[in-house]
Image (cartoon, rainbow, N blue to C red; front, side, top):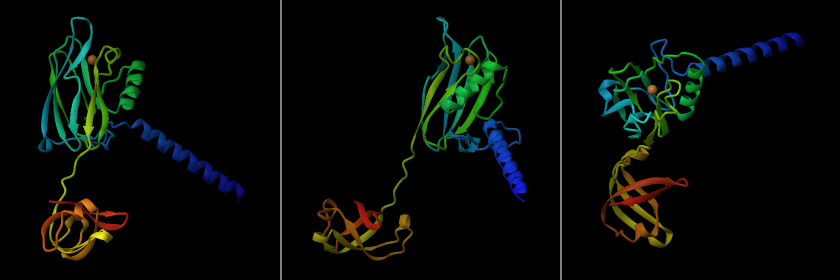
Length: 238
Ligand SMILES: [Cu+2]
């Protein structure tokens, strides 16, 4: 009985290790026609493209290898079509990943001849052009690079700064019914509070002094409400 239990534990441990291992090595190779989300985002669709960025890869007269432009600023959620052209005399590639992801791939490529054929990359012979369509679903700092041995060190990498998306707030219309300034409370007859999923009704809200001081009973307002420490609070008015 005891032996059987041990065997089950051992086999569970082994399969878990195998699963973790294979997950580690998948890094987005598109073998099944499906690619999972990477930290840097996911393959984008032509219909979602919000911006086209031309990227040139080439060598310079003083022996460097460059991308032009050498940095990108992108807003979270944007789908970018990178039109990549190799204007150099050597083969180059354009790979989008995390800085760590690129470093790992670079190490692998130093050990063996590897050609990327993932949606987050394109490898081009001199004179050739191709595109990468990528949706930047996450904010953070990512990197584009050429991972052909020696090229990264010669200058072929740059940052991709993805700025956090700012969500547009929805103001709600209301009429100030009562103000209790000393208690920091205001009663508002309001329309539907769509952000908080509340129907139109009359409710008591908390409010800071600077907001209450701008209010008077009977006033028509448009306001933002948030739950602050569990209490409905007027956070802005206009
Ligand atoms: Cu290169």
